[in-house]
Image 1 (cartoon, each protein chain N blue to C red):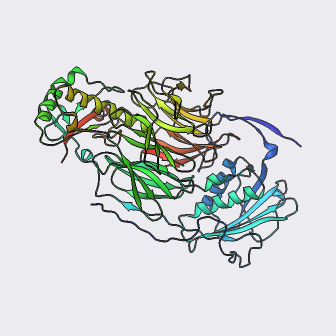
Image 2: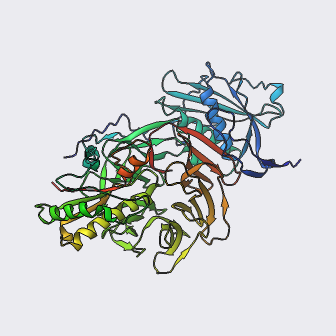
Image 3: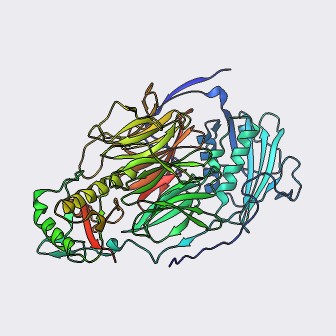
Length: 180
Length: 417
């Protein structure tokens, strides 16, 4: 259910238009050249604080140096800078993901993420390519495409915000979780 | 007498604290067409902030050579200081913010104190004061019959990341003096003005399982679901009459550009590529689009007719041109000109045309991204990163005047003007 707080403090007829009623100038006289503007139209503020990306709330666990920000037994897959191919070092994690996906009782959500060095739409597209690479790998191992949902979160959901290489490495990832 | 000045700016920043120029731009301009004007502050308490906003308005218009001294004097008097007699115009003003904001201007001819124009402005909100000032300068500009600069009255809408997985969508005046959050919390991205009058925005919400595009009326809060897509969904551009939008969508996991007819809800797939196609912008009377694609193995700017398959490369320089905006046949794009995997990279903005006939840099230093044309195409907004400091910049393409305003917010995700 949507929780929103809409604050409307004023609705007036015109914003910065020139058809307001003539009113006294600051010095008390009436402008003989122009009018005084009525300025209006306060804008809303909508509060969606009840919502947030579920992955973002998972700062990731670390077991013997292996970071993981996926949930439900899945393992996060990490990528090289600017790359969206799954490296052989991720094979074991993909085997784990395939095994869990094949026995999953609900749909699987695959989320592509990027480091902070991209811009705007292109970075989000790069995150999607990573999610698609993981999805394709799962499908090649027998997981039904219909049981997967992919999205890109671009650079919006870092698990690490320190300005260093190991931190950037952790953010170039695909997280997997069950849709609940 | 005609004064033709050729000014080569090599100084990095203009000394006023509020703004500075983008460095090393070669400016060739005929100053005969600009009016020499001085500002005289008649407020009971002189206000440097107001003065600086007025000065920036005059400067970025490209139509005025403004005296940068904060003069003070009686707003209601026609008396003009002998020191200002050499100007063409004197703009006397006063600001009163005891209750809301009230602003009064009187434009005088400097030579004989003739009253050219006077007007008073008022708004119930103190925070909206900058809009009064912008409107006043816009009116002065019109009175003196210069080309319209009403773009200074427009809102800038932008999204910033607040924490991981959360964002805010904010409104600001072009100087960022006024700022207000219109969507807090959640993950709401890629705000785009839905109409010329700036009454509504499109934005992508991540509240649902898959990205969903909404249209939000910013005055009454009403929301309308437009469409949703697995993978990625962004409203990249809106047609002039607001009836069609360009979407980046990935229904099958590959980003392509679609045109959506808002009346019928039908979508036409404009690009068909297995790599990355994003950032569609209408060009050439909306018969074609410019867009970013990695079809050559790296991000670059291409164009394509909406209804035929031929695609051609627009930009033939650079190996990483990853964002663009367009107005008519003009295209401004971002080019990464260094190759540091991590850390600082040089990004510059270039101006070209859909026919690739001419290309010129409009920035030369630093990290310059998120370019957006003003509604009339005469000015480019962009974000400039200088170390940890982010500024919002404006370049008047006709006069080559530029301004920077400090951007003390969080990391910007997307911006529209």
